[in-house]
Image (cartoon, rainbow, N blue to C red; front, side):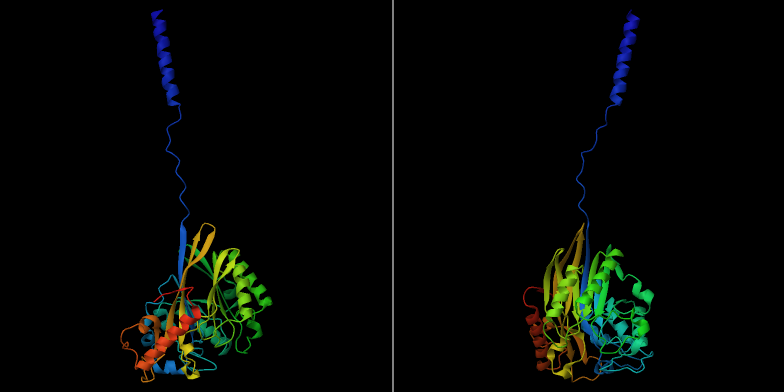
Amino acid sequence: MKRWLLCMALLVLLSGCVLSNLQPAETEPMQEPEPPAVQRVTFTAGGDVLIHNTVYQSLKTETGYDFTPSFAYFMDAFEADVNIVNVESPIDAYGNNKALANYPTFNAPFELSAGLRAMGATVAVTANNHCMDNGLNGLFASLKNLRNAGFFTMGTYESPADYAEPKILQVNGVNIGMLAYTDSTNGIPVPAAARDYAVRLLPVNEESAAVILADIALLKEQGADTIILSYHWGAEYKDAPSDAQRAMAATLLEGGVDVLIGSHSHCVQPMEWIETTRGKRLVAYSLGNLFADQVGLGRLKTQAGMLLHFTITIEGDTLQVEEVAYTPTFTYRNSAKKGPGRFLLLKSSPLSGAETRPEMFGSSNDWQQCKNALAHVQNILGEEFEERV
């Protein structure tokens, strides 16, 4: 009997051990899921680069042309993730800098591409009213020069395949869809065989808006997370956009564009927020000239431009346009000089606020022109947007 009781006790003890081993293991407390990472891309965009003969003649060297002296004071301006410039002058349309030309049909030296890249620009807008100045071959040559210098180009294309390829930049994990249009080629027709691909040429009207909305939708289907659109449009030398431009901007921003960057007026026009069903979206109707010589027109405002700065942030399904600011610029023409240094691209704000005349200005009158250019840009943009110096 004692032996039997001892066996039963051992069985009970063993059963308890087995059961205890079958109990659920202790688990760590459940942690809150980490918030989605914020994706962030910074942008800087500059206005028209229009190279007149007075400019390239001042930059001639024994072996070619060197734009470095003109951009020497601007080398820290394009430091964003994406740096956009509107290259309005065709570049080396005939090869070896043959037949360089001024208004009305431009042709700039091939060294311009390297000069703009050295300054930090990375994306070239090529859809503008001068893109056909030297015919279709000139358009193709300009594209080749820019791409050989390392530019991502938008708005003109060398083939149907080039046109059809999604123009998407991948930066910091964000797929940036890039579109560019012009409302004119100055009456120079695009040859029929290339009309469907060479230039995104659309006037500002409702029919064009429908075409652009389809382009936007296609780019989103191809994977674009955000859409940046450039439009060479409107009237020259006007300080404000037309009603048609404002209506087009509202339609395109509602239809998927996050930032619309305008050009062609050769002077700065306002920026504004437009409320859409996706939140606030930005239009800058014209950035003015970045680098040009239109002093002979008697319009100082053509020498006053701006850089546009903004940031796209994406968190989950929410995209925002943030950190919008502008940098006033001034293309200085020093008539006392004939060679390098005659034309300088400058930031006008810090120079205008200097206690004494900065060394690059040949006279107090020249310094005053810089101050006047700054005041003009500030007056056009008002106080809604931050000025960056």
